[in-house]
Image (tube, rainbow, N blue to C red; front, side, top):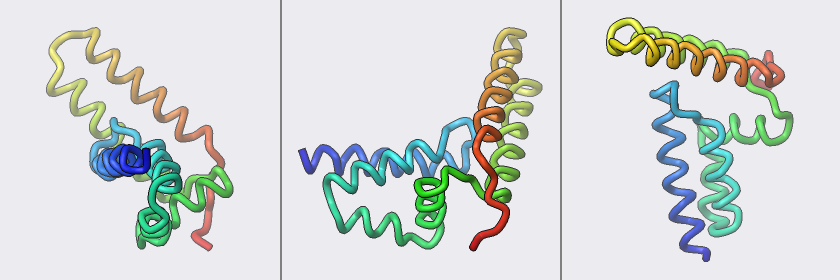
Length: 122
């Protein structure tokens, strides 16, 4: 099972990193899943993820405080709406797809805003 956990954790990590650039794909759940699976399969991979320069502090902060840094909230919501509106206005011709995209963006925004905000990066 160690290798299965390591494989799924790696896939989850890849999806999480892709989610940084594609706002519709959730980053945090994939990164947290990766940390949990690495914890069960590979202490080395788990330590690497938690000590990673960019991903580590975000994962530790979220796990310990269930908070999202203000900058991360602003950037993620901005990119989410930029992508959603681009798709709704320029790519989708069907009105129900346009409405669906806006509703999905609104739901993801509400989810992001439901977490407490970490104002400093201490």
